[in-house]
Length: 157
Image 1 (cartoon, one colour):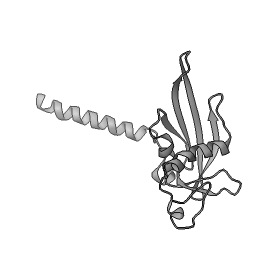
Image 2: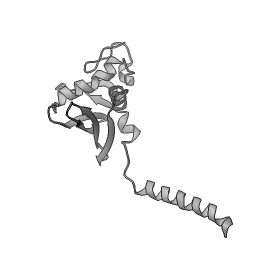
Image 3: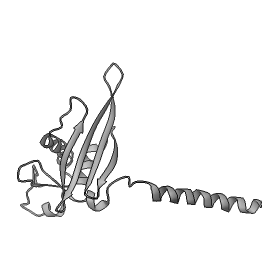
């Protein structure tokens, strides 16, 4: 009987993990969603020359924000970025929720919800998100790698 205890325990652990994975919601958008180009804030909806994943990594790297994703449907995801700041009177919860929607193989920022005092204007938030890839001279999408390529606020290398 003791000889079966180890394999039985392993089976319970593997089975529990498998059941958890089957019932859990996806934790983040699929790679093909994140690899699409983020659209700029201009009226022409010019591409930014950066994929959504590049924008998010460049904007949040080396920061104290935590992130989580929530799926609305296959084409729409909400990213929540949160952090705690100490304002002298104790910690203050700061957050921004970005709603991204995929249309025609590009990603559009469609809504922003934020803590009091932070901008919810789409143009201001897209500009803020693009500061990271611009400052870090991140790798653009293939379309913008060619000489003479242009994009929303994009400066070729």
